[in-house]
Image (cartoon, rainbow, N blue to C red; front, side, top):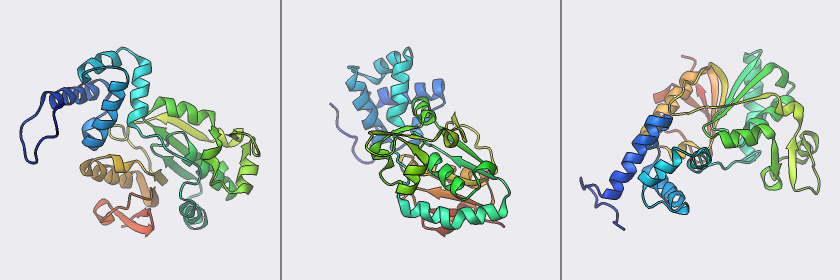
Length: 275
């Protein structure tokens, strides 16, 4: 195996060229631009997946991938980092419920919300529960999107293992989930499930829509290059109405939010400027 290139080297190895061709083929056929993800991390993850199936090169892996829906779904699942749970970082959801939802509801008769890169649905369902507790779910719209069709199907089903609901307050668990108690899985209530609109969406390529009152995109941006993140923050800001809120993950503090038309509203919450 050829080792990493020396710092500042302009040379590329055959392995580098093999991966770069793969990146180009993926982009031209799927509109997924792997060059906007952190290369070392993504390349390592996909190399492991390629080796799992016994392909010696990315060229060979691409030939198999392009002819197999199952392999393509596995590829999307591996590259989109599907890790989520209800009430992840509970204190931040408490701030959303106690401060920002009342503020937003006071300004908008009907809330438009977007859970971007929603994975298996825990975050949009958490939001739906909080809006229902506030008596506002019936006058709210929740869009939930992800690149991976497999996780969207799981999200729409709304059934979760016990580990996914470990941070759900007991009152909420009893009120909004079927199977609470000693069972190994929990199903979100049907009337809550039906309030979420799930659809496939490519953050790096598709239009954002809006204007939204609230956008939730958490623990996803860390996998993108700095250039890609900057572009996404700008597009998120543009998709918010003035005064709207962007809620990001616990490792995704935005430095210089003013560069994007945002201002810090609380830890991991950013408001689109009114000006």
